[in-house]
Amino acid sequence: MAEPADASAALRLQLDRVAAHEARVSTGPLTRLMRRLGQTAGFAKVYSKVGPVIDPKIRDLRDGRVMAAVYGFPILALHTTGAKSGQPRLSPLVYVRDGDDVMLIGTNFGQPKHPGWTANLLAHPEAAVEIGPERLTVQAELVDPETWARTFPAFVAVYPGYANYMERRAALVPRMFRLVPTPPPAG
Figure (cartoon, rainbow, N blue to C red):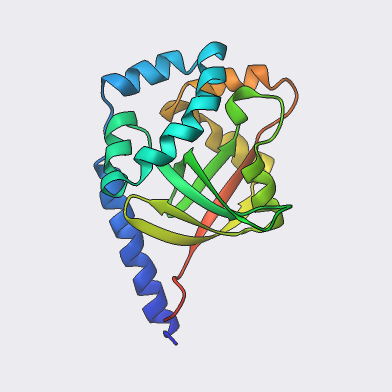
């Protein structure tokens, strides 16, 4: 069994490798196009069907570097346990960072309902994320309204379409989660 100091050091090394991966994410012509098109309801409707099919296929190429180069957004793979099924679930998602923590928002492409992965985190807050070549274990927490208000502009800065999603969701405020990295399991 690893000592707490060893577990903390291992987590720090993982977080440093995540930061190195994130430093390689850069915007390009496709990023600018996605930021413009993503603000339209038509694009969101199409991408909500196409993205979940395409994204997992390119997510694993070269430890996430291909997806980072193509989209130019910080994208992770969220591994959850199904709220109802208990089965493993995988969701590629845009994220922002708050220190070492990972922040996620469930806009569901502007649809007036919460995405399934948010119910999964509410039911089973122990999860994992893959960012580049690193897999981190995390503990999910639904954020308070003050944190939501402080963090939402960071999501809009990464992807302006989030602001438009809010208009289409009417009164349904998207769930936002803080994912707190935990030391890797011993052994």
